[in-house]
Image (cartoon, rainbow, N blue to C red; front, side, top):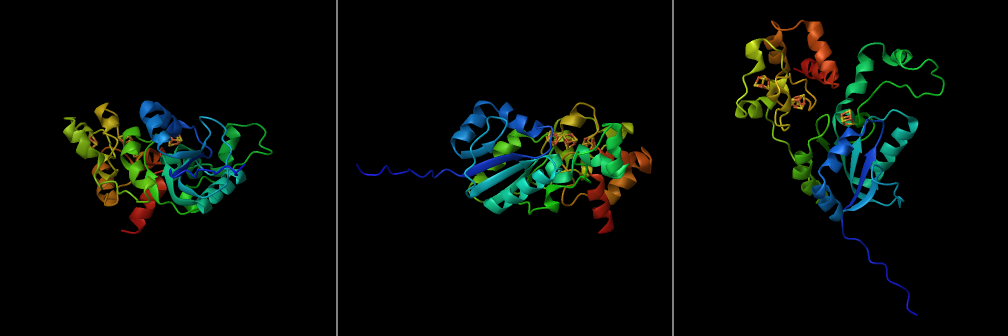
Length: 259
Ligand code: SF4
Ligand code: SF4
Ligand code: SF4
């Protein structure tokens, strides 16, 4: 009897790797429902632990999507191995791209912040929080906390054919104005919208809530002008506190230093 031929899949091989995280960005994918299933049919999904524990063949990958922070030694190893195997590696969300909410501890008590959570800390990994680009090259970022599902569907086709998409350099204000919102700044409510990369549909200011910058600085965002504009609405300390919520503070400091 002739040996059975194995039919090789021509579909792009994709892994969704979750490091230390709340898994909220992965839930956004599942929340796409039928549309996520359609995407899943077009690819060979090698790893997505939210669905099932898949047998990973450790072969090359076309695309790796990384959610969360590299906190444990195992996280760092997983991240580096994923990078070695991947043609393209994209950050999935604010934690992976900017350090996210966990990065807050870096700005205050650092590794000592753990004492407020655990009584006994032996055996617990407790490093400084670092974005994934401190460990590996990152080709693209799906910004936000959590990511935006529509934006995922918009840019994923390009990534699957090996192209790196470019998110338009527009502030959150563009969609905010289009939505007909009264600008919060007019009411002396501080909002980071002008320096933050749009694409979220201005969800926060549309609910009369400040933009706290979860999508990160836009390439031409003027951080010095933003700081000056908010001077009469918040103290430097309040500005810093708001910038710490989504790991924006170190990026702001870096941008200001290089101006
Ligand atoms: S970016 Fe936000 S939603 Fe995504 S893993 Fe981090 S905390 Fe969770
Ligand atoms: S509320 Fe914020 S996002 Fe909206 S226009 Fe004003 S500054 Fe921009
Ligand atoms: S308005 Fe600002 S904080 Fe809110 S989702 Fe958009 S970028 Fe994030």
